[in-house]
Amino acid sequence: MEKHTAKESARDQFVSKAGFIFAAAGSAVGLGNVWRFPYLAGQNGGGAFVLFYLLCVIVIGFGLMLAEFAIGRHTQLSSVNAFRKLDKRFTFVGAMGVLAAFVIMGYYPVVGGWSVAYIFKSLLGQLSTDSQIMGEAFGSLAAGTFSPIFWTAVYLLANIVIVIKGISAGIEKASKVMMPLLFILLIILVIRSLTLPNAIDGLKYLFVPDFSKITGDVMLSALGQAFFSLSLGMGCMITYASYLSKNENLVQNAIIVPLMDTSVALLSGIVIIPATVSFGFDLGQGPGLVFVTVPAIFATMGPVLGRLFGIIFFLLLTLAALTSSLSLLEVVVSYLIDNRKWDRKRAVIISSIVLFIMCILASLSMGPLSGFTIAGLNIFDALDWFANNLLLPVGGIFITLYIGWFWGKDKVKEEVTNGGSVRFAIFEIWIFLCKFVIPVIVTLVLLSGIGII
Ligand code: PHE
Image (cartoon, rainbow, N blue to C red; front, side, top):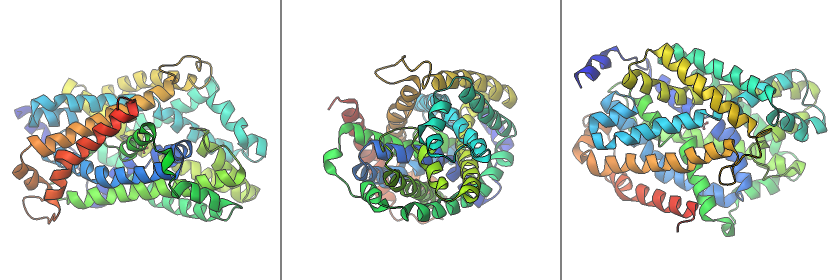
């Protein structure tokens, strides 16, 4: 433990309050909101999925995020060491989180790469005719061999450069500029999408729940999406909060970050689903949805404006993706630095090489390797399912159990209220959520999603 104390003083910190919120929100807001949320809503029957997702965010998101903030800030350590210091028996939770980050980073950069490719496609005007947009452009990219791997490499390289530079310099700067811009652009797009013919039907699909669509599988997808979108269950927020100063208000942060994240997800849904319905595209088409529908919206704006918006949109999506994958890479890298005693550069480079190999396989699994499946899923979908529908929820169960049952109520209270100086009226309710509600709900959804109950 002495070793950790020595490290603490040398630890980087977020220089401003806004810096942390933007970095945490930057981690949360990413492909999960703009790419994954709309296509899952489309695939899983719309309103019922969205409703369950929102319930998960409110009940689980806030509670678990606060739990992770408290653990990270208290220990000032990245996830594995944080648990090792607090209670050795829980070290595996941190380790599982590192594994989850690793698995997610084994396919996330592929989608990041698509987004980078789409900046250039927009720039070169390759997304203007119907046939280009509808399938051709996306299909030939995603199912290709070299081109998606090339774009994945470009995307991963951007991550490597920023993470080597360290926390405050790289991550903070990137998040601060991009978030407000993305928000504004989404609002403009909402207006465009909702003024398309029949858009209202899409809006109904998204928000009017059809409860007959609720199955264990749908609930698990919504739950997994809540974890993924909020970057929870894997120690990412623990690691971020470990850089947080002792006088920050954790409770406030744990409310603001999910609020921002959920607004971006809902806005993206309101952009994409009504437009998809209006154009008559397939709502259940999966991972290609945003890459097909959004260019189609731009195509209705005329050649110049459409192209300009296309460039800006995919640039912002790429930046949003970057601030998320930076945080994932940071979980892996800080483990290698803190536990394996590697230096930062070596940790980033070696882990990125392994991740790149995984990404190549994930990318090829949409094309040449699509015949290879695990339990009916290609490599890309299998990695996604394993991380989000299994590792993150299980991590979440143990993190909340630790707060509820093992850390000690007084110590928890001391940490989340900054030694009594921050008011937290629903402390008892939060503890109750951590003790019973969250672990029980997550366990039940998990079991029913896997088909055990
Ligand atoms: N929340 C990020 C997104 O929505 C992904 C992510 C998951 C980042 C888990 C960190 C940890 O894109």
